[in-house]
Image 1 (cartoon, rainbow, N blue to C red):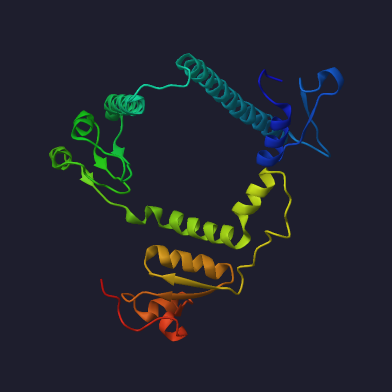
Image 2 (spheres, helix red, strand yellow):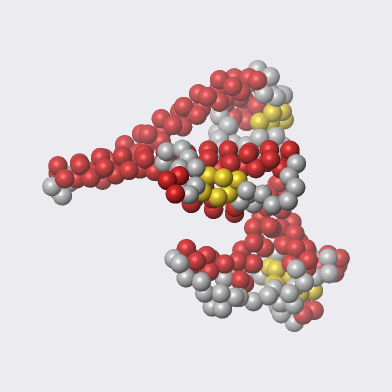
Length: 280
């Protein structure tokens, strides 16, 4: 067993993440080795899969061990510094720490920008999110860039758009790229809310098995209201119908026929909303 790796954590990680069962050493070898056991017939693919899972878990455990050691060293340095100062901090120390953190952040951003300028010439397209800024300097470096297709584009300055136009780069927006992710996230939160998953998880981490307390409710035959029947709303409704839920939707800008096409009740027909359009 590598130094700093807990055999119990390795056993749990392999079992829960990859379905691989291992056993630890016995006697003097307890905690020093591990054994992979099997029941029945195994082929070469199963063996290779098990060994690959062990490599992945060990690599993750090594990274976690290095991170723990870095935190311990930082905590130790902080403790020694605190003892030297005898619990007193000079005025403005918090402001100085904030300024130091801001300078470090600017340095990291500068390194990332320089790295982008170095490698962008080897790419034909750039895909970015709304929070990512594609500057004119980076665009000018792209000798092979023929298309710029961000999922959501938000130019920070007019020079960025001008640089793309001068190089003949097509700027396209893909607003539907996150629709499915948002809808699935909504359903995931709905299931977590109905089944009290966060509360049960927290209790289990604290060593309490409270199955009867956090059993929750079933989503089947429950009513879900969807306010706004745009792209995301429709995807949420489809998934809720697949769970056997009754879905009632409302959107003053969507024709009632669109609701019926998906098997969703309109709130006006269900008597759950006013027929007047909202005002801003």
